[in-house]
Length: 93
Image (tube, rainbow, N blue to C red; front, side):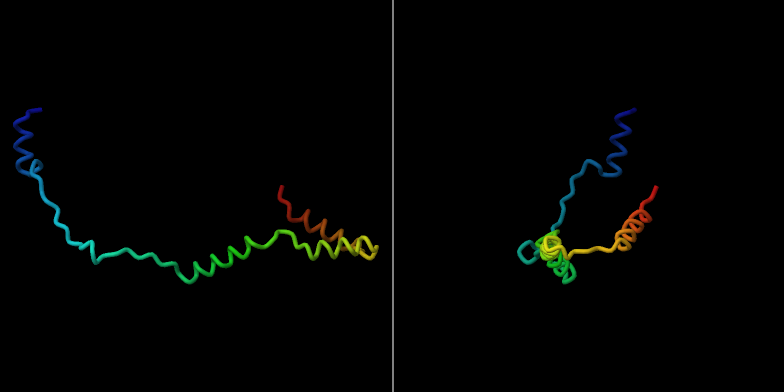
């Protein structure tokens, strides 16, 4: 490669010249703004309510425990069979 040919090309395209960048934005009056939409606020409220709730519904657990201790908790065999069949039918092999 000839260096004089490179110099001629760079002079044509002015690759060696430095140009100044003009600033058009004023930093004192321009400011960025961050806003959260109403939908996001509602979602955040719902998510925090779900996170605060317990996974176990202790009122139902305590009710069933009390009925089992009293001997009044009865489940029909048909209901048990239906639950077993429904859980087996949803399995994929």
